[in-house]
Amino acid sequence: MTDPDPELDELMRLDDPEFDRVLECVFGIHAHERRTYFALLELPGSTVTELADELDRDRSSVNRSLSALSEKKLIERDRKILDGGGYVYQYFPTPIPDAKELMHETVDQWAAQVHERIESFDS
Image 1 (cartoon, rainbow, N blue to C red):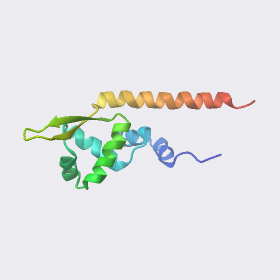
Image 2: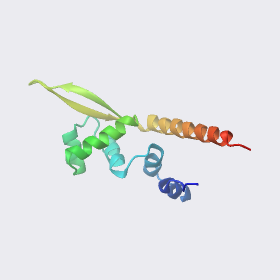
Image 3: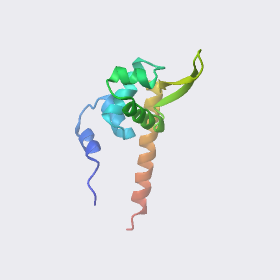
Image 4: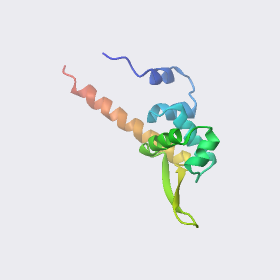
C-alpha cells in the first residue's frame, strides 16, 4: 500500500486550512503557480512581462505557471492586437466563485473515482 500524498495528509490535519492551501491541493499546483493566480486576481489582463515584473520571476517561469493554471482552467488567455502591429497575450483569472465551483467538481470527480475503486475490490 502506498502512502497518501504528503500535501493532502498535511492539509487534512489542519482544522481550518486557508483557501490558497486548499487550492494548491485540489488542483495539484505549486505555490508559485498559486501566487501567479492571485497576482492575476489583482491585475487581470496582465501580460507575461507584467506578471514577471510583479512576481519578480523570469518570464519562462511565469509562462510555465500560466500553462499549468490554464490546464486547470484557472485562467484564460486572450490575444490583444497592438496598434503598431503584432499582438500580445493577456491573461485573466477565473473568478473566485467559479474557481470554488471547479474545486467542488474536481473533488467530486476524485471521490467518485475512489468509490469506484473501493467497489472494485474483491470480497
